[in-house]
Image (cartoon, rainbow, N blue to C red; front, top):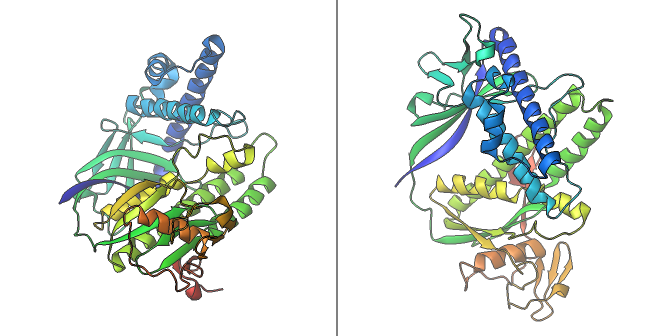
Amino acid sequence: MAIQVTRTYVGHITNQHRVQSDLDALGDAASKLWNVARWTVDRVWDAIGEIPDVSSLKAYMKTRECWKNLNSQSSQAIIEELSDSFQSWFDVRHTDQTVNPPGYRKEYDTRPRSTVTFKEDGFKLDTKHDQVRLSKGENLKDGWGDFILCEFEARNDVALSEVDTVQNVRAVWNGDEWEVHFVVKETMETPDSPGDGVAGVDLGVSNIAAVAFPDEYVLYPGNTIKQDNHYFQQQEYDTEGENGPSEEAQRLRQKRTRRETHFYHTLTKTIIEECVDRGVGTLVVGWPEDVRSDDLGKTANKWLHTWAFDRLYQYLNYKGEAHGIEVLKENEWNTSKTCCECGDTADSNRVERGLYVCDSCGLVANADCNGAENIRQKITPNPSQDRSNGCLTQPSVYLFDKSTGEIVPQEQVVP
């Protein structure tokens, strides 16, 4: 069966020295438009106590001169991003009144380089010569300089000429230079399912994922994420400027984000590959339904709103689809305190964060693996796996190897 998938390909701009000043102007214009729209929202909020909807905000901003610094569709994309940010803020405010709304874009007395999105009438792609023409706004056009011609290099395995549709192009400042990101839609044949097996995934923080495969339990700790967060937070603090984040602090934030994204992609790729090798055709992901609706205190609320469970599910879903694996969501209610052996449910069974001991049947298990097995049993009510051999107590552990950028069994990690 053929399916359509959306992917993003990154292109390195080879004529950076020729186009950087023009791209800087567009990035600055995008930040200015954001700031003016952000100020407008503030003014409306103070006047009527409501945030203007996206269509009303667009209609007003079209009358402002800064709108014409970018292609019309690029300006619309900025307003849509701001509107989405405010909507996310509203959602979070229900449980955390201290959370701040979207802020202004500034670095000291200047504006940072914002990402600029070019939709269908804002770019023209020449795959034969690896060039993309990006449109300027009316105010920035100057005779022959009505557009920016970027020459780029993509990875060897990327052929933009073969994709169905290039939906949009984004000019992105990565902290050191500009890149072009191509958001494409491709048609691909879905492979046959690798098997009839079912695996369950329990998502968490200490262990980013615990997976109950048909033949083994595997933990994927989040040590790398914790170490990076601790290191980069300290580095950002040491380079903080008097008037806000310094350029070095901004660069460190971007680097931390890139490393985090790489880790999540590597993790989900590893889980899907393990499913293929083990004949798993269905992967059940425990979904923390309404986990952000309860007020658990300032610290817990902040942690919950940075927990990337939805991101992990999205990565698993599209990677699984490409390998013929069906990825499902199942409510994880009570899976952490229910015994996967006898079904007894008691808060007291969860002895410690990582230890589960059932008072009814005597099962001793890693708590995350017990949760993953319960999630698996939502699809496979009567699994044949023997859980009396200690595999629940001492599961396999896969760690991120920084020297190779891959996730491998613990004994293979170079100390």
